Figure: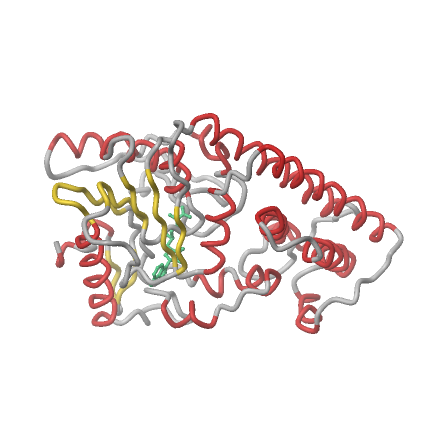
Length: 364
Ligand SMILES: C[S@@+](CC[C@H](N)C(=O)[O-])C[C@H]1O[C@@H](n2cnc3c(N)ncnc32)[C@H](O)[C@@H]1O
């Protein structure tokens, strides 16, 4: 799809075409709608909390918004069995749909929960005020060169961050984790997780210029406060768009091969399943798991199609069985006449590449 696209510098962005031609097939009506979905609107990339937290393989909000409008009605239920950071859930609730998301990653579900919990005006104010308080205290400690104790695992983090940055981030972590473990507390923890990679000098998510960038004391703290303000503004924007009476989305940590959803509930299943052999979400996000105190143990076991050190390690048989199971689950939760739209990238299965249009064909 992107063979003819202009060369652009590497940057983190949601899944989208890069301006190349879009080939379509199948029934002309839906094919036209699908082609139009790929004309993404860059303005949506940070709207409604979409820019709050980076996440590998995010769906572009334009695709989610257009698909929900085209293939479901207000009041109906939209299900995303691989909801990741919650792009589909946010767009579904903003469009007045009941939304249910499932993901095996505790990081994905934490981000999705924070992005779909509107908190209410008073709690949002508390979020912003707490973030400013925490940022001021951590910034002050950093300028006075006070070293926080830090948990034992954090000693190894010196490989990922410059020392003064690591101490300031650990100071922020200590203060953030001292706040109550409620909606605001979870949001603050995710604000910390969202800024971590900006300051890495090494690791799977480190920015390219991470080794050379000079980061002044106080910058991480200010960024945390800014993130909280951005999140609160995004939640307000969702609330303004959302029709009255829209239920709060449900987010489950679970396996897409056994969805905790009754038969026939969904009018639309809209999802972006893992692309075979392309990402390893547990390794990719290992820093955030550690800093948030989340265990990747169960996730490592149930994660589908993970890319391992050696390419070609996603076995043909196990991938086909997994694919068959999650597609059967999607069929089970759809109501008669309901539709499923899967956004998939090319992958590697066994020793050969698998192009997106082939995916799932064997099971439909
Ligand atoms: C392409 S990403 C989805 C990203 C999402 N659409 C977004 O916008 O953030 C694929 C997701 O599949 C999840 N996943 C992998 N194996 C899973 C399983 N067995 N059950 C549920 N989710 C799984 C990963 O954790 C990852 O979040």
